[in-house]
Length: 480
Image (cartoon, rainbow, N blue to C red):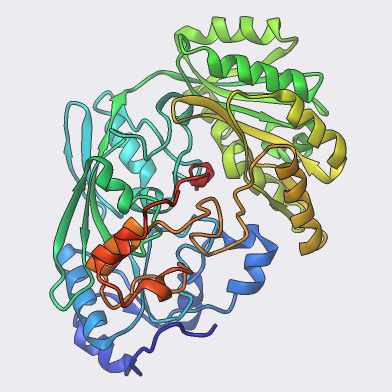
């Protein structure tokens, strides 16, 4: 891949020596593994990104070691890409121009659990964090379907919503992220703290404009969540049940997801629990609200097939219901059908099911419908993550246009450019932040198409370009 910047030739042996005892790795197999994320969900990204490989991976154990690596990267003028466990889908953690990959997984301390917040290092595993919170009677309001492997910093830096967004909105909504602490990439890295709306300069910015080291996040009282699956004779009935449940704010639910009957053949671990060719509603419901959930299902013409708590699921060898939701739904198909891929589509508020019906009628078995109900700007919307049985790039983009023509905006997951997916326009405030914290443009280069145009401007001039633009059109559909 062509470089957009002039980097120094680097003596990597000397670089490693200068790192001292900071763990570093240059084994070719490990370099390749740590230069990838789940971009292979997309056949387009698989072609474009497969050959992008770092020159060196470092895994700092302390923030002092992190600072040492950053200082050396700055003085050597090498690209730096941050990563957690690489569970993103868009190439966010792929080093387009080689250089240094910094894996943050050893920076995993939980500093403080307060009354309604937690302060934690960016490399902390999300599942471990939630377990520690639940021991204190709390939980994360929003987490990703990949939480067993993903880091909290990767989720905040690359995701935008997930399990819990039906109750708590998107991560960017005020109060979900209380504070982000980040280091600049300069000769002497400087610690910066972002609060209020300022957190969104770093959130969902893919690590292009600062090195996230610590996070303070909202917590909520834990619930006794019950894994629920209901079946319906038609997809419309399942969808309407999901819509009704999404509107029931008197019920505590962490997940509201509908999937086409075509998925059931791929849900191997649920065989014997769900009927073949049945359309499904998957949900996490607080124990005391399960009777109301069952009544709603019956009113919508469905049947509750499974209602088990976490301990019962584990005893029967069943995975959490959320492992069949969001992009884990796609993964279940990809485990069998290597040609499958997906899209990200929004059914805007107020939700009109006839638009879904119309697209379903046109596309038929070429597409499997899958909707996640979430709150976006405090309105109920459905995010469609349909599985597409890929044939050609041309056909994939024709399908996107069919959705658009029916008033269902597409957030293209087949691009690694931050302005090319859901965020249709450049966010000049973020780019101004990048200029302040990453003056040489070394952080995750190649991910912003607008940065080369503004990189020589001062931050104030970059911010002035924000007037008259919208940078947040549909980015909130992206989930890790």
